[in-house]
Image (cartoon, rainbow, N blue to C red; front, side, top):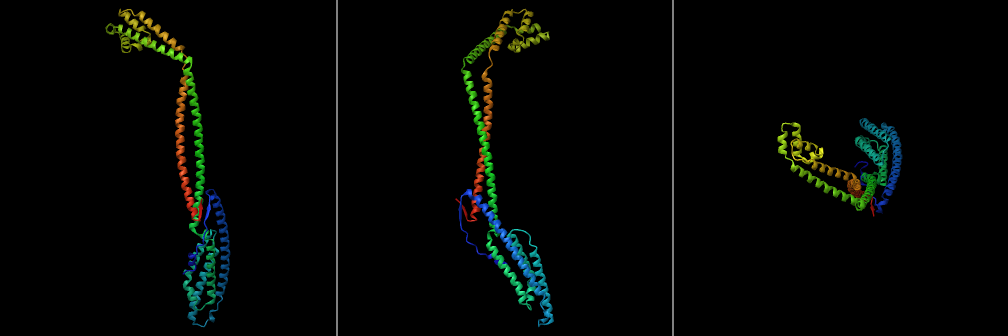
Length: 387
């Protein structure tokens, strides 16, 4: 069995369970962290002080070993030489151990103890043969040195037992995981607050735009019920009747035109023939474009029926419709209805954005609940249970 093997057989101290509210977890972690820091400081101070004493003691005992009078030993010179050589080798390993212990760097108690254990393990392995061969002639002095190491190992066991919570890697890992999860919960709470703030902003915008929509719809309703608006609708209806009548009269004029005769008359004249084709293809459009001037010219040259009166009558009706249209006020509802359509598009966008934020919020809250479960699980490793 190695010098430090019994460190693995520490008795597990009884840990009392504790119940706390989740709101107190952060405070518990803060207290635990201060406790760990304080224990680490105490443990490190104690280990360094005790190790310093061991180094001092080992140096003194090395001096004792150096001053052993081998010549006084009543054995063969050959045996004296063998023991003396092994003693010098053993003293060399002790000095190396002293040097390594003097070089201990800063670290947490677990790291320091592991390093000490490694140094003593290496020392025990390397010095084993020289130690046992030296004890053939040297008993008390070398046994005293060994006892110093054994006493130190007992001290290290006690310090390990006393500070199990800061040396046990599983417990420290659990504590670090606990801190990490709490930080993630804190970050999650901030994200939740940001998303909820976005949702509230969107809700305010939605309400504002819904109010605007209702206001515009109300204005549209008031306008459409007004006498002036009803008169406009009445006038527009009358104009449509006049336009239908005008269209009918233009078609009646078209029926009176002999396009075959006009084609025969002007087939050799490109300009006149194009006018004939234009009227034949879309009589109403051609008539409205030139008010029948070209049609009248073609019919006169072709010595067709006199259509001058009909053309004048149609133009009078056209002028009348144009004048009536110009007197109609602009529909006040057009802009309002356009604004309403834009508001509806904005409302759709705001509502879609709000739904997206709500889905995001739900995912974040699920993640938070998972983190809370992790925190409770890590706390249970410390026998702490969340109510």
